[in-house]
Amino acid sequence: MKTVVSGIRPTGNLHLGNYYGALRNFLAMQEEHNCYFFVADWHSLTTHPDPKLLVANVLNVLSEYLACGINPEKATLYLQSDVPEIAELYLLMNMQAYLGELEKTVSFKEKARQNPNNVNAGLLTYPVLMATDILIHNADYVPVGKDQEQHLEMTRNYAGRFNNRYGVNFFKQPTAFISSENLVKIPGLDGSGKMGKSEGNAIYLVDDPKTIEKKVKGALTDNGPEGENSQKPDCIANLFTLLKIVSAPEVVAHYEELWNTGQSKWYGSLKKQLAEDIIITTAPIREKINDIKNNTDYLNKITKIGAEKARESAAKTLKEVRTIMGFRNL
Ligand code: TYM
Image (cartoon, rainbow, N blue to C red; front, side, top):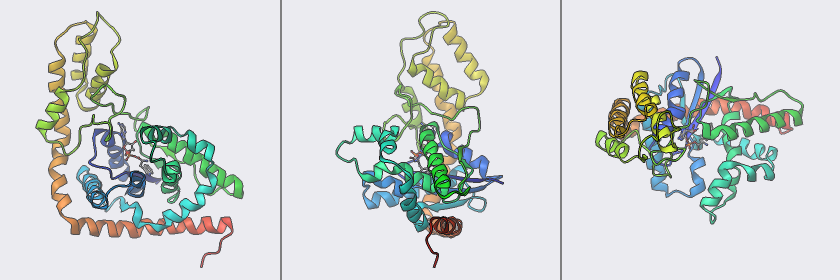
């Protein structure tokens, strides 16, 4: 049995990128491994969320985890901020991270460019906190989408550096969990490479069928193939990527054939099919989300039990790290 850790930031509702990039793998892994899934609420602080909104978004992510099928009897489900051991290990791990490499992180550079007036230290050391989330349970696997690849590489660097510095073989080298050959990257509906909350190009698990139909209908397309077997522009390639994920192989083959034979006027039909297949996946989840979200007693109970289990594992790691580094454990 391996140890698995992963988290999602509470910055709104979860979208298809979160589902196919992360959550769907959580479901498979909880059946056979020791899993820790959490709501990364400290990670959302880089944008200074309004406290009321933060509370609402934590409930969103928790209820969406459960509606998708995370089973709190199989996996440990908790809030990052309920585990103070993470904050202490974060302080210790910060000493393994160098300014030059933090400044070069793709996600940091991107966020700093988007919000030049809010380049806070938390944003800079975001990868260290993420590494800490993973190392606090000494994880083997981390189910994430392709956008988190670099953060995982940094996690392995910090783990290795710690081991080298103290002459121990304590931290493992955690790897991204991959259910297929490649890490998944779900594209947006606007022709861009990544579906994201802030990009305004996402389909959310809570979206009702009408909204999904409208969004897919509005997805960016071109004027049709320029001849036979031509190369697809990004916006069309994206629609095919989505289709491959939610639709049957024969459906994909049918539209590939239309593209490759250079036919026109079938984008409407493809979009209709795509919307239908997305709705088939999301409808049962959406129906459960609202029931769970309103049951705050249940959510409190689950996360209290989750926090206790997570703290037990975290305290064990932290105690050993403190000893290795030369601190006493009172
Ligand atoms: P976050 O909250 O941005 O996203 C949560 C998960 O969803 C995946 N994801 C995607 N996968 C494929 N295609 C997309 N378009 C797409 N959009 C999002 C992300 O890869 C991620 O797995 N730093 C993390 C949260 C985190 C974490 C951790 C994850 C904090 N500590 C420890 C794993 C382990 C983040 O911002 O994910």
